[in-house]
Length: 244
Ligand code: 1GP
Image: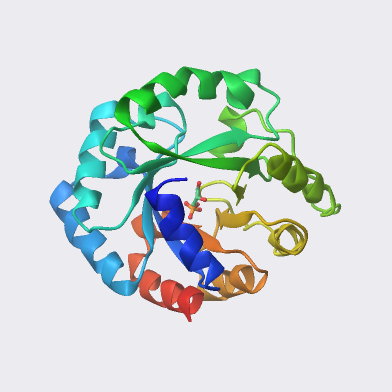
């Protein structure tokens, strides 16, 4: 595996908890402000930047945002809503299978279409099983999600084991950007207990208390996105509670 995987896995295997900041290039107005804010986030201790969005990201926007974020020295990882998010200026890409999609595009076609671009750009791939909860967000709609029953958390183990058997190293449990509720902590807890996957959790994490619950569940990496746009002043404390 490559440099970014080494960086992440050495931290995770040391028992560190990580925070990723998600930047949606479609929502970045001023690149100068982004640069200042990205440096502040690096100072607070965020571990990497994700770039992506479900809709409206132009390849130019993805390039420009990646170039700015790279200046922090932290890894910049594409978190692709689709092929338009793939930028050569990133370090790596979450090479994802949307495991609970009903659409063959998100199960295998997008990965095939992306592979030649990823080769050409020399991006490191982080093989990731992506599981989307609930039905209310853009990713759930666009990704044609078959919902995970919240009252049957043990079902997630079938996804975790399948991801492991397919050779994936990461699983991303996603409530969807802007979700009114996060993924229930029992889901990352079960995956952590019964697989060796690195567990990423994101969506709807907008308070210190929720971040604490998710990190307490055993999640390795917590992603926050919406809060960057809506209440950035909360980020230092959220990062602090994750990294404590
Ligand atoms: C979305 O998990 C990320 O893909 C972050 O979600 O925007 O709700 O923080 P939020």
